[in-house]
Image 1 (cartoon, rainbow, N blue to C red):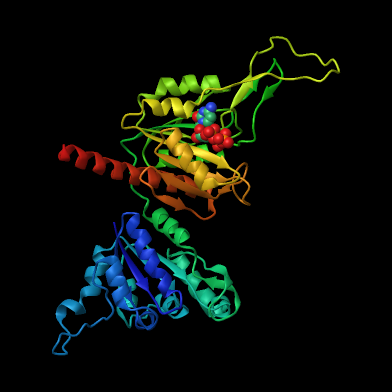
Image 2: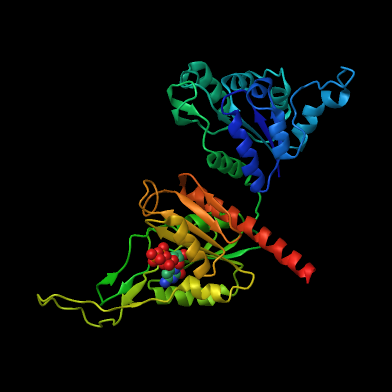
Length: 412
Ligand code: CTP
């Protein structure tokens, strides 16, 4: 996929350089267009070196003899036709105003009018400029026309003031890019087995041990995968959630039942995602009668449950295995250890103590640790966006691992 990155003249222009690198790491081809203002902050050479492509700066590029040539005069049309998405980051108040009014007086603004691809703008400016009625009206005009706006963050601004105006975080911008481009059914050939929710381990006919898992994360992954065309089997512990459209749900209660359902469906899956919060221990004996209170202290004897993920990963073949890790400290260390110990391909780690992450929230803050060594720290996102990013990473990793296997085969 080809992204045209428009860089306009603001202090945040330097952040666009990092954005080029991150977009490329995510598999996009990036072509950069810089306005005259942007060139006051960063040189085109920086972007040319990073993108590996010529950076477009002028509407009428002059030849050595000082004449404009026809090729450059119609290049904005060629760029408009070949791009899959136009991303403008940072977008100044001036650029937004020109886009809103249809003024086309340089390459970027002309490209904006000529492009039929989706457009995303990530504004960055002084807080008063951002809050000004003129800017806000322009933003509303663009939004109404279908332009996706990645709102600026609040914080300390280069002008010395504090407020909304800082360019949004890189991963937030990339999430918007991915969300906008996600129209294709890129998981059509996959069968994905997902575990979700808590397990309940019975003590007697009325009591059980369980945990606070709501199942929201696993269900979000199931729904997102089904929307992207996968055949999805969701093995779920008891939760109060609706089964996402197009998903086959197998309801289980205990870790043992979850293990049985997974064993039955694993062979037919190409990807297995273990999002369930499986109880690590269960009562060693199940009382058939309700236990009576007798006033004396009670000690429960517990035994470990089977590790469903680790068992599944023992015979994984080409199947990609994704696990979750709920951590309270040393998140990266613990997650990488889990990746190796469980023979998984990807671990989605979250710090459950962070505000806006973990149980019962509709948002999550996770880092994705992949077998090929990449650590992808995501900002606070809705669970549905996190689900999409997990699936994106699974597909990226599948590509990397396949390329490695092929080059290994051709080497032997
Ligand atoms: N898992 C599993 N079966 C178990 C326990 C865990 O399939 N009996 C899976 C979970 O679904 C999750 C991952 O393994 O994908 C979590 O691993 P675990 O070692 O249980 O880690 P945490 O519970 O996050 O943390 P801790 O190591 O502290 O228990």
